[in-house]
Length: 316
Image (cartoon, rainbow, N blue to C red; front, side, top):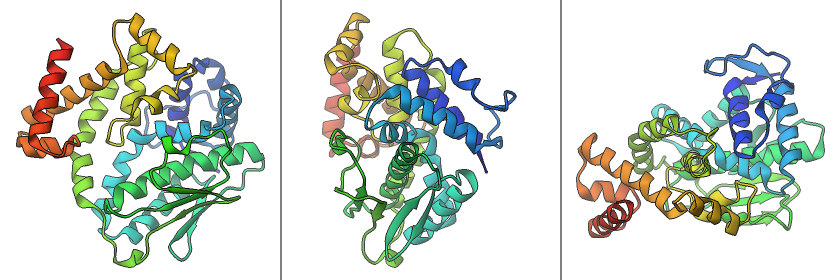
């Protein structure tokens, strides 16, 4: 069974943020000549699972599958755009998502039965299968939330542990279940993709990718690693402090102290991202203030202008 090579590359990139030796992980891969820069490259699923297992063993956290899934936010936003080009129907979008998994990541599959998605995997190792399904559960959940109208919610069912803070990952109702299930809204056949949100992603994605390519996940500066992680987790909304801090092997106090030692803070990093996005939208996309305010998540133009002025003053 073969999967797209970029999935393995993203996994190795994530390991760098966890202070893991990626060279050791790469040596676990049977094919040492993989071209990770080739989007068409396919790899053996056994290699991916070996690396994935080593990472979850090294992390020793109950939420590593969900953490890895949230790290993959930016790299999969383009899938929503691709789906929107092929259909305006949520249900058809779900089938496209199913086809994508089947062709690109077949170690996990899902079926749609009566407006509920059930995820499954044939991986034998119980812990590995659980974390793998947790990762894909979050990815699929996020893709669906991007497609659904803002007012509609889903219901998440999966075998979470007591230590997992699901509020960091899911905005919808979460219930314990031995299976991995996403319950979709009623009347799925009649629902259309949220094109306002898709258009927002279409505007922001090129800039996000450019900013991410300019960042250095292997930097010795902790603040640069935090910025790179933050960019990866954009959905396209910017993640909060708790969501980013949980991706690093530090307590919140140590996390903040390390940023302070480098003369910055998480708030300043977020402001730098917001200011860069703001200038990009106004100078390169030539959008009106009210449109920029909406895209960046502000309720009114006045709130956006006030926030922009405050950010510029703080960044001086």
